[in-house]
Length: 157
Image (cartoon, rainbow, N blue to C red):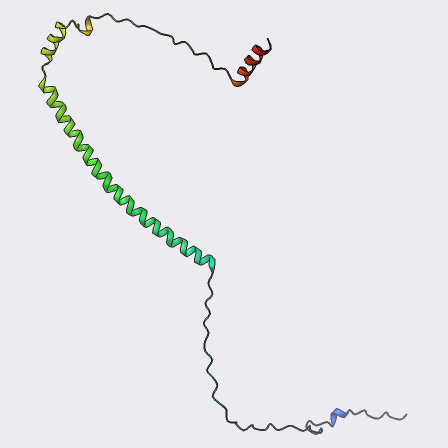
């Protein structure tokens, strides 16, 4: 029998770099052209405003102003209260002094003698009677409907 030939693959003889090379394009160095100076771009600053936040800030400032005015009014009212409280206490003490002067000026025994001369008697000598009175209930007023019924009954009777 014949021997089979030994199979040899192409890869066995392939060497990298032996294939046909493609043409490589050489990059040409561009020569710097003369350029005009570019206008410097201005920075544009954009501010975004949130209307809800602005409304909240304005509302807070208004409330702060109102609260400050309220505190100032309360302070003024407190000083007025203190002034009036002092005035009332001064009047009470003056009233007590005047009452004591008035009571010290009249003689109770002299008043009792004059009252007996007029026919008055002491309370202890009087007899006490208790009188009970019942107040009659007023008749309820007639309503419009009752007025109309009365009118119609008198008209058609």
